[in-house]
Image 1 (cartoon, one colour):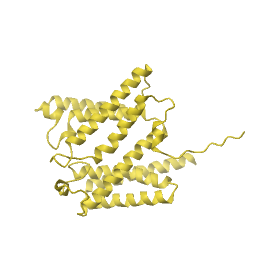
Image 2: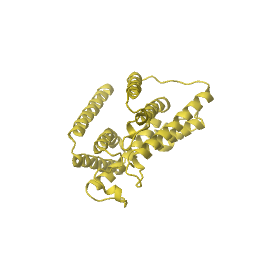
Image 3: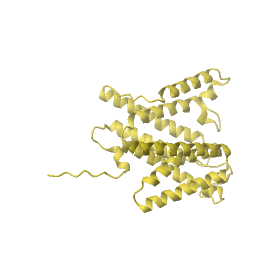
Image 4: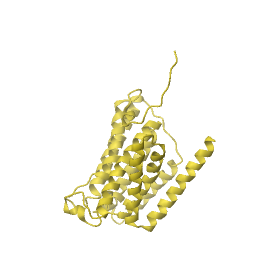
Length: 263
């Protein structure tokens, strides 16, 4: 009997396949996906610091859930497979330097817990960010899992792009008066942060547009890419453009090296 193997289409459901996964894997992946999607999209209109405090809390709590699920999985399986990467030492050194800087701070509480509009720069958020990195590296191993994670990031990014485009044109999607302020955006209180976030989406938009098989998908990704560049142009930050040029250069170099490798 001839068996024909077909390449399965990507779906977010692939991240929750049951084969050798435990319930802790499911909780971990749900928490990570939720952090990637909800952190940039959720905001509160009742507080002036709606950009930072609640986003930091959402990200930290979801990361904590993911870390606890990871630890529970380690206990359940009576061991773990740690995945080494070239970023392990730089990330660990950066975290250690952050701790040292906090120790010499003139206000320990503000450095650890934060102050209005600066919650995302605290030691607490930085520790959870580092933990988030290690959770992803050690638990998102297969191509399907990584594509699901990147797909979630891209979906949230497209929403941010569309909302930012209308905001910058003066067409406000939200009724709350606090969202009509010039410095409002879904990412945070800094338009520069929005610019860097949008640039980080460019490799995903271009990569998925190239490999998309359906014309509708390619058109949608093309429109999202055009809107991305339009928002970057409206923001008009020189530093962001330098970062965008560098990102695209590295991406094109990567594609060139990959093409030579397959020749």
